[in-house]
Image (cartoon, rainbow, N blue to C red; front, side, top):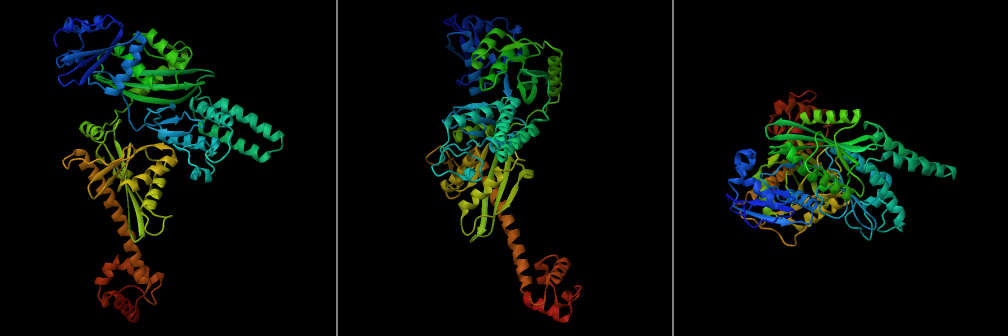
Amino acid sequence: MNTPPSNLPDHPGVYLFKDVNEKILYIGKAGSIKKRVSTYFRKSENLPDKIRLMLKHVKSLDFILTATEKEALILEATLIKRHKPRYNTQLTDDKSYPYIRVSDDSYPSISIVRRTDEEGAYYGPFTDLRSMKQVFKLLRRIFKLRTCKRMRKDGCLNREMDLCLAPCVNDIDPELYRKKVRSVVSILEGRIEDVIGELEILMWDLSSRMKFEEAATVRDQIEELRSVFEDLKTTGRGEDLDVIGLKSIKEGVISLLLFMVRDGRIVGRERFLLSEVEDIDASLTSLISQYYLTSSVIPHRIIVPRIPLEKEVLEEWLSEKALRSVVISLPEKEKELKLLNLAEKCAAFTVPLKTPDSSLVYDFKSELYLEHEIDRIEAFDVSNIGGLYAVGSMVVFEGGKAKKSDYRRFKIKTVEGIDDVGMMEEVLGRRLKNDSLPIPDLIMVDGGRGQLNAALRVIDEVGYDILAIGLAKRFEEIYISDRKGPIRLKSTSPTLKLLKQIRDEAHRFAIQYHRELRDKEIEASLLDRIDGIGKQRKTALLKHFGSIDAIRSASLDEIREVSGFGDKTAQKVYDAIH
């Protein structure tokens, strides 16, 4: 495509450059599509290298008209997030970073999610997973809000554990419940002192009415809140802003670090990599609009190292989104400058994030009809013989490769008899309560719809939003939570091959642990059946020979050589094992 179409409108909107296969290469916005697109076809030496390269592949142009330039800004950010064009500057982050979602129900629930496509308010993303889970557990314990997706008529385990007010079975005043929700939202927005102040008033009120036990409970909650948030840096009371630091870490790649300051406290920070950057000044508007497109919390001020193009349009859009004035500015005070310098210093030390193999991600998304990329996969299996020596396994793959340091194995504790589904529920429940591991993008269980439903029950109960699938062995059918029937992939499919590899690895790991427990039990029981062989002599035998197999292979004379064994005792052992 060497010249622009002649019928381009002199009107605000979004334009899309496409290749011969109608794949979108680049998305841009403009106050006048006609004037903006024409600039691409003037003197090519004035264009950035990336754009010149892109134009060589452009075969067609499409556009979408909008009423205002502000609408074009929003639409551009939305389309870039959806289509991820090759030649646009994009925010690249770790897709496993979660949000905390507050649902939009009569009795709202809180949950940890990775997707932001459902109704509700989202807080995050959180890069410090350990701290985020600590805060989430604290909020559940203090405010006892729902974490389930759907309220059950008979309640759930969280009610029994006193982690939920259980509006599903209890007569809870909706206004009282929503007051607790507002307290949770205040904490997630960084207004911790406001909540502590309300709790202190409640504590003294209870005390004045001689409800000392309830007052002590509130006092403990205040101390817990202060303990969790005491390490947050204070930069001055009353400030509510985001600080964006930028640093070039290599040619074409910019590291962005954003500090979130709420009521004078640094309550979080987010890291991103900006790839394919030719002109940071031209890209900054798009980057800001991409970030705040899905953010539920927008501060009063956004401190930037340089003023973005179309600053006024950005401020108008952000102000409408926040329902109050939002200002984008350079640092105006010394402490703001110090924060900006700190953000830039931290951005300089950002390690480039690992990304999974692109073809693998593409296959997962297209073949399994997924909307989001998959990097971390956790697969589970259980192994037992008639309910005996029952164990579970968890294997982890990231970017298509095994991450053995994150493997875990479980000895079944609460399920008796032959109940694979119950065992799977126990294993998943114990894993998802583990704070030390990242949240997976995908959970896979060995089995069909029954095993998958067990996984979904556990995921729902703990309040996470994690995609789960089941891979059934007989026909290699893939069951997905939101699809009625199974998916059958071709035997040559890279996605199916990887899923089978992960499933088989989980099975191998479970069998290995099962055999270890079984062999230990057999060893112990065999020696225990020999009269006159107590714990001391049994230990001496195993220490001398190393295993039951080695004892079986030993001659009578070799057994006599073991310390503490005479002719009579050695003969007993020899006869028993043969």
